[in-house]
Length: 218
Ligand code: G3P
Image (cartoon, rainbow, N blue to C red; front, top):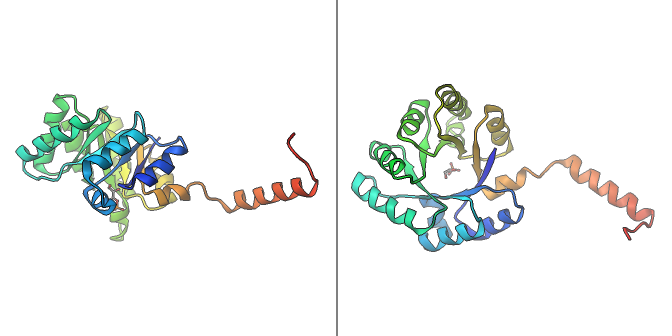
């Protein structure tokens, strides 16, 4: 499964990239606004920090003609850029156009299998299915992910299911169980994946025993 970090903070990208385990970065207008830096400079810096990674950058218009202009501009910045497009009618039309041009897309704000079907048929590279925001409403956000993975596999669509709005390690576990292709998460949630109390206590004991015996490596 691919792991993306969901952030507009280049320092977080730099730290995550040092681990050598991230396959890409997702941003959205909220995350870019929060970064306090310009859109293009932030996205280009992220491309540099994650060589070869898929870097999602989102259009902000909602009418087809302006969305197309924005998409062509954004995708011209760097070959690693994946154009992120909201799942609205003009967005699906845009994804069809970009797909014909060989431009990769990430369809965002997907909450249902019906929406995912529209994105897959338009030729989306990634379908971003949000889970945390659905859980916040007291429903099961992973249900649409499971059904969408089944749909992709049953009909042989080429789109990858990207689990977004991930908040904690249980979302990652369930994404793996569902067979999702990608999970994107905030840097803070990614760091939680390292954690296990038995790892911490086990390491403390190893080091304590080693030091008490007065051993050294060389
Ligand atoms: O980038 C899309 C998504 O991951 C947003 O997550 O936490 O704002 O629901 P969140």
